[in-house]
Image (cartoon, rainbow, N blue to C red; front, side, top):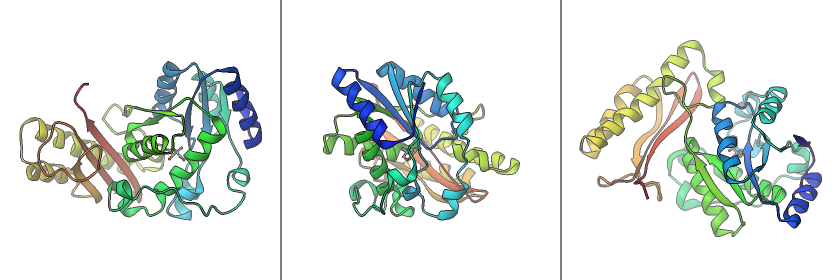
Length: 280
Ligand code: PAF
């Protein structure tokens, strides 16, 4: 595995691969890697054999300095995982090169963020994500990229950005990987206390009850009520059923939908969702 720590070196390398006609696939991460990331790497390898993965904790997508500073870090362990998973190029750019100046440009997608899911309570978060992903795409020049469905709103925004700005990157999603009790894997889980870890499972229960309700023909109000029940002890930001393309709350029952929850456990904000699509 080649480790690249500068933007100029990454650009030169990806340019060379591009000229040679070698398509690459890219998985951006913020490190503290777990099985969820490993599944993205495996999915990516099925798309193209040359895999670039980045580790960069993007300061401009955090809503508080504290959250950014508390984000778990473990570079040595991460590099071992990247190697084990067959990543060909690990890109770890320094913040000074990623943001030589405070970015003034904003890439925003108001229709899918304003008042919608995480966009409603995390002002500027998705602008920060789109900014870094846009630049990482420019620097790594991949033919394809893979994102986790756990961050479904993020995936949708990135897929739309790639399409509308014609970035030449095909954006794929990969299913959420769960602990044996159902908790969605996330780097943030590492910060949960033992009791918080037990409470966190309520999010999966809420989604499961929502899905059961949809399967058994309950009304949307009944489904919404059923989802809220297990979440009672938590501070809930949203727990609802959305249209998977517009992210607006469903007005009537539909075959395709997104059940999604954001809730706080131990002062840590956790999100999860079930995406229900008809087989095409
Ligand atoms: O999902 C993440 O880990 C981040 O939001 C991403 C896509 C790497 C951008 O910083």
